[in-house]
Image 1 (cartoon, helix red, strand yellow):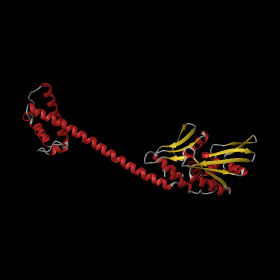
Image 2 (cartoon, helix red, strand yellow; image 1 turned 90 degrees about the vertical axis):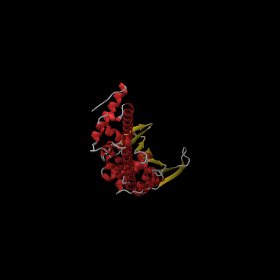
Image 3 (cartoon, one colour; image 1 turned 120 degrees about the horizontal axis):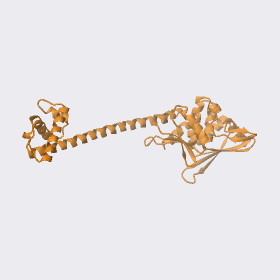
Image 4 (cartoon, helix red, strand yellow; image 1 turned 180 degrees about the vertical axis):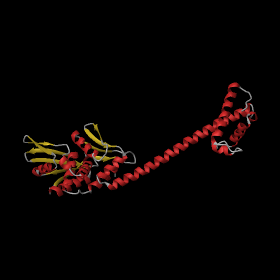
Amino acid sequence: MSFSTMVKEEIARHLGHGRHCEIAEIAAIINMCGRVKVLAENEASIKVQTENAAVARKYFTLIKKTFNINTEVLIRRNTYLKKNRVYIMVIGNPTKSMDVLKATKLIYEKNGEYKRNYEVNPLLIQRTCCKRAYIRGAFLGGGSLSDPEKTYHLEFVNPNKSHSSSLQELINGFEMDAKIVQRKKYYVVYLKEGTQIVDLLNVMEAHIALMDLENVRILKEMRNNVNRIVNCETANLNKTVSAAVRQLDDIRYIEETIGLDKLPQPLEEIARVRLEYTSESLKELGMYLDPPVGKSGVNHRLRKISAIAQELRDEKGGEFYD
């Protein structure tokens, strides 16, 4: 089961705080995955289609509980994905369909004719609980959430631009930063920030999914931190090893050309210590000297040795003193 399906199953079990919330949730589901047609002055048809059984069950329950209407449910096979079922829910009575549309503010009257309203009517979402219910219904009708193990991405897909804009405004009213992008003939309202997706799950009251997502985020953050530390330590180790190899090359070149005894005593001392302890850090090398020398002192001496070696390579010989 996908993470998105788990979220839908959880919020499908959630019942609103009152009839006002239930109407808002019904309006969102119809706006996201429903088809509305005005047949006559007081008659209409509403058809809601989904591939998710939990969404179909929730819509059926809401219509029955809120309007006392029995919805006809048709089950068909998806033409493209033969294993998937498609649930089509139709309100058989055209007059009662019109009652639902009027209550959900999905139609309005103009010049004696009823017109389809795609925007979120302010009267539906006067209370915070109704705003939460509408977003919950929108996710049930056309939302999806990527597997948080892979990426953070939550979206609402809808063919109507004005409704998508209204939904974006509604979500951003909860101090989020939802964006809209057009994808073919659809408009996608989306969030990509992990913290904002967690906040939206809280808004939809999907608390179990929220905790699961937070656990994934914590584990991912821990893994990322460990990887950063390991990468940093590996880079430092590589740098130390490369520096040690260069230092050994310089010391051996001096030893083969003029001999280490030709170096000033402090430089000869650190050179012999480096030859003995080939993989130690500068700080550790300094501890082997008598008296001990700090990291910067060791680095200074090795730099002077490197300069002498380079000069020898350039001049092919000579004696050097501090």
